[in-house]
Image (tube, rainbow over all chains, first blue to last red; front, top):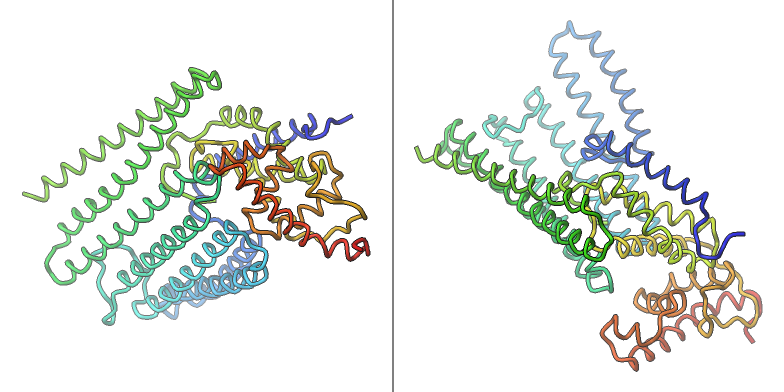
Length: 301
Length: 179
């Protein structure tokens, strides 16, 4: 007979197997998942849209003798993406409306986050359609891209992203001021929230840097070569800030494992592993510093 | 709940490290959840399973939290609150006075009714009652953990119990059990 409040051995081993599978699955697909995460419904919607897109592509491919088929194809694609983005926003707004009464602070934060992201994607899709209509070609993120019909689409895109980051920053700060004082919360989530806030500030700073470079290039104060070097400098500065955060995490982990080792809750192997990770992060930071130094010297010449 | 894209691969948890943490914390997390479900095994297992699956995703991407067990308990508790917020109210039999009893070994039905009410109360009050009735913590221990005097904790417990009784009233009324 089962003892109360003790997990059933069969459940424990089944869950362990499931976790092992999940671990392997995540490891295998991690890069794709980090880029984009969607709910099951949206995956289906994306597949439908893909099918529509392939159909449209077939039709347009058959008409390619009429010329400018590439532009038409591009426009069809961006318009399809726009429709998908619009449908996604409507779907999420509907879900959020239904769930609003039941949401705790974490759920509310996540739902609002998803909705913000979907709205940003919708505005980006609208911008992409306008850009393809004006230029007839795919957009790029090169800081030296030309303006078109008096519009700087690159800067508009970057401003959208900056607004999104700023919104996320404010939302996270508000969330943390609401729940950060709850018992156990600071220990459980505190360093993650701090790290995320820092990450957002760094990313925001990097976008502002790119926008400034773009202005200087369009004003003729910088040439393409100078923009390239300065852009790398901006990226390196952001990467260095993020590396500093990673360094803090790695140090924290070493300290935690040392503590656990003293309490006989961790092995020497775990400590070696944590120290190895710390050394790796340190090496990466040093390399970034070196590259930054070299680029600065190059810029002074 | 908070996602960070930085540090994704640094100090990333290995499968063996994760399974070691799983084996260490499963009994404690299961006890924590099971007490809150009245040993409703199906519900307890669902919540524990979902909590560990979230841990796989979160810990691999964001690194190990400083207090893994606190993290697991926070996530499990939020899942339980979400579950009981959505759940239909459970009718209560006559003569049940939850705030006067130790709930750790109560029947799943009675615990579900209490949880239904707790999920509708202010989180601070609900947590206080949970610590006392489900985790079996004494007033002195709660006072020490929260940096309060014992008298203050007793006062808060009294107020929280009053709220719990008030919130539970509709369940009794349905059965005509409140006289």
